[in-house]
Length: 386
Ligand SMILES: Cc1cc2nc3c(=O)[nH]c(=O)nc-3n(C[C@H](O)[C@H](O)[C@H](O)COP(=O)(O)O)c2cc1C
Image 1 (cartoon, rainbow, N blue to C red):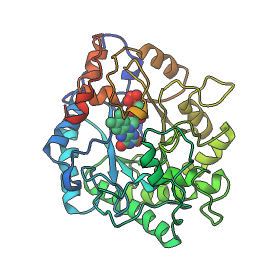
Image 2 (image 1 turned 45 degrees about the vertical axis):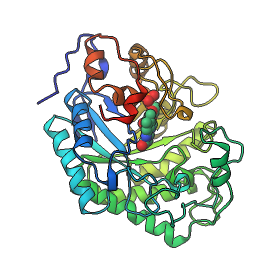
Image 3 (image 1 turned 135 degrees about the horizontal axis):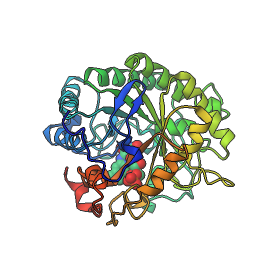
């Protein structure tokens, strides 16, 4: 199989195989989902296919695509963001998955609805307003990367989503998941982090509903659980991953869960609905999630749910991801994998996500495995598909 044989000069425990809900991965390195905006009209072309194919050929065990808009007009804003809605986008993604598979790779589609964070201005559907569970964008005082003018645009309260809008969006996820299967994806990841739609239902700050979609942590997860349930039906036994995070783009210091118990109550309905693997998004893979313990968000999710978990954040780079820089700062490449392997050996996670380092260098795994120094992150690579 092309690309399967990464020479393991450093005896790397992360280069061991893993079964992702029955799908064999040749190692535990995962290309983390990263929005690229190279899909005009929502359709990925040859450039996008080659970009993912190179990561498969050069050894990533699993690729999670950039966020892909579900089949709803209010899903995503930027016109270059890809979709899984309609024949052209399915055909475009089929070309991507065929090339990844020919290179020996495994690829899952990240399904995305931006909810409150969608900016209708300049989007494909500027007349359609952003969807917010309770009409609330986020706190007025949070730490954000956007300008004061932008925050002033988003802050005023709008109307809550109606019951029929909620039902429509759940169905849109189901259609997108079926489209992912038609496009040849090996599975699906739901983007349930960073303050986007699924997360905005789970986060008490943006979900003040008093109907069945709001209330305590468990009740706030009921929207996501319905989505998981429908997506599970659409993809059958294929792997279903779920990304969640403490931090939000409306406030990087925000927390989804204040305590491990609250995190458990938040994730439990998702396990029951059929999530196979959690992707615990964090700025740094070893950032302690709660006071009083060094354990990371991934470690807590693994302990609380009993499901396999992916950790992510700052792998291969000298500084953790700063959302306020949009990933666009020059960052020194470092081999910090000994620390990653220590946490892996301690049982904190099963898979390790690599974001900017993977975007920057398709050969990153080969370089690490050969004991070569990693490249610095070059922000110019955000503007091209290396
Ligand atoms: C340019 C860029 C785009 C991103 N887009 C997404 C996305 O579409 N979906 C998502 O879940 N995370 C997204 N992220 C977050 C990454 O998946 C990852 O969690 C984060 O960059 C931390 O990992 P790193 O330190 O290895 O880069 C993005 C990050 C960057 C730098």
